[in-house]
Length: 473
Image (cartoon, rainbow, N blue to C red):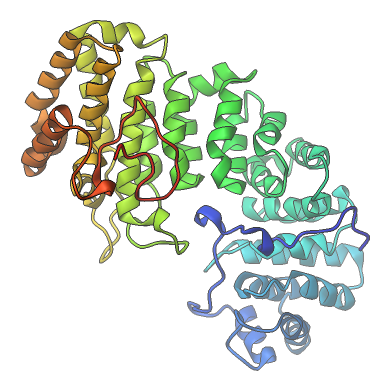
């Protein structure tokens, strides 16, 4: 293949960020016929740890020994499970074994679909594989049009061509994606195409802006954020302040949730500020809910999917504290909502409604033997600053900064403290009351435990490390 630019390995760029790209695993469910044949040809059940060249040879050998099996599907099983970047080797052996161009394209498409679907679906090796088979954008589109059983496969195939443009100006990736968006067979994969073509771009926010339209902005924002999880807020900020701002604001709840779910967990509190400044009064509550669901909706609450503290239950709970503090302080600065905070009754009603909505949005999916629906809500009460004290402390700081008057603060405080049971139920009533009082009456610092301080939404600190982040102390 004649590369347009030096190609970067898809695995080498850290695509497992945010858990959006599965890490291949050696643990299989019942083997498919193709996987069983591959293991036999390999002489080992360790497909995950196999040498890439040995694995590629085994793909061909398995096809020869089992002529009724599709070689593309066998290749897909190898791509799905191997952890040693076998795309180039498998592509080379497939090209040697399948000499008819049309048959080769079909086999490549089958490989992409198989890797992206069924048990342990994992497309991480597909882009490298495709990049070694195509010499033009049209080559990639031809394969993608035959991979329409999976939108992930379509995105990974088009993304494989994007690897040839690494180091350029991003213009080639924009054109690559835009043409795919306009293809009647590929347009259903706008989000996945956005994701896989964006991974190596220089400016992900500008890339998203170049691709987004009124009709696809949510899918583009979500896809590009999936490919660049630590840029999620920059992407949202660029879109909401650009020519599509009105559309983004109109879809604020949907975009906050879909982008937040694929973003690095530390980005969601930053998004709370971005949306808070622009959201309409009508959508404030639904957007607040969506931001918390971006935390509670993640696949698994306990444990860490990527080996860092970011995805532990403790950090997820602390992120919720940041979100509620930031969002409440920021919407008060929003010109569309600010008048509400000049009326004590209206302000109290709004803050109560948002607090109740956000706490209830912290329910998680039940996973038998792993997590129960109210586990995150319980975690929000382990440290006062994880939710209610941070909310109260932020309101106190808003009054100290002259953003709200003392009578407004008193009305909000009274409403919250009288409505605790309707927020968290009888089970959590005492803990929520104690946390609110700690926030309204405390300094924000918990002596001897700097990681348990309260969030200050008025004076937002930098997102530095999980577990401490923007804590006042």
